[in-house]
Amino acid sequence: VEQRFGTVHCLVNNAGIAHDGALWRLSAAAWAEVMDTNVTGAFHCLSAATPHFRKQRWGKVVNVSAHQAGRPGFGVANYAASKAALEGLTRAAAVDLGPSNVNVNAVAPGFVRSERLEQLPKDVIERARKRAVLGRLAEPADIAQVITFLCSDAARHITGQTIVGDGGLSLG
View 1 (cartoon, rainbow, N blue to C red):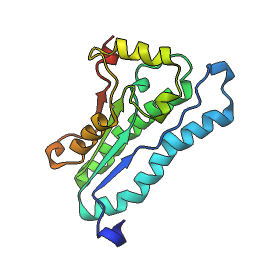
View 2 (view 1 turned 90 degrees about the horizontal axis):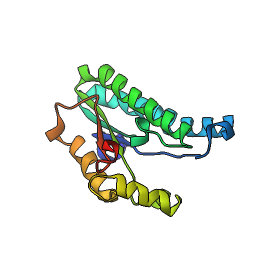
View 3 (view 1 turned 120 degrees about the vertical axis):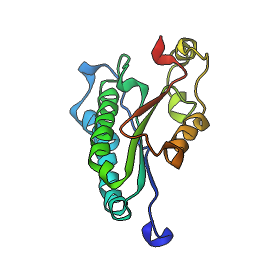
View 4 (view 1 turned 90 degrees about the vertical axis):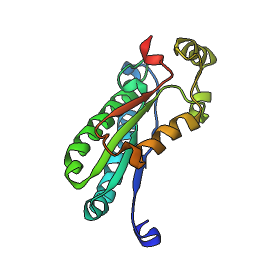
């Protein structure tokens, strides 16, 4: 990126996978794959971008978490744990990188219309829609706008935070 564009402005860690199922059926391999993708992958991307951000004394990082980090449902132990760890990494990186004028935040979406959502049973999706106080699921653009804000100068004094964009699902 630096060779092609001259600098790195923003890093958005959006990779995420899940292996849903009851905790007692969760294999060590499934646990490790989710943690490696959702947490360790973000760490490696941060590690690659950090020297550039520190050198230019500016940068924005947004890690995409999930509302399940704080309000897990049944069968998402590995996913919820990985997203909670990602939020911890967000806060720790904000402390480490703040003196270099680098903002590090997270966004925790609820249910977003996506390919992953289509894999869930229809009754789960409908329950989530009804539990959200706004009565709807998020569109990808709803979350993208929050990420865009956090990458802008308008968010220059926000760091170490997790913005929950779940339509009020976590209020119920």
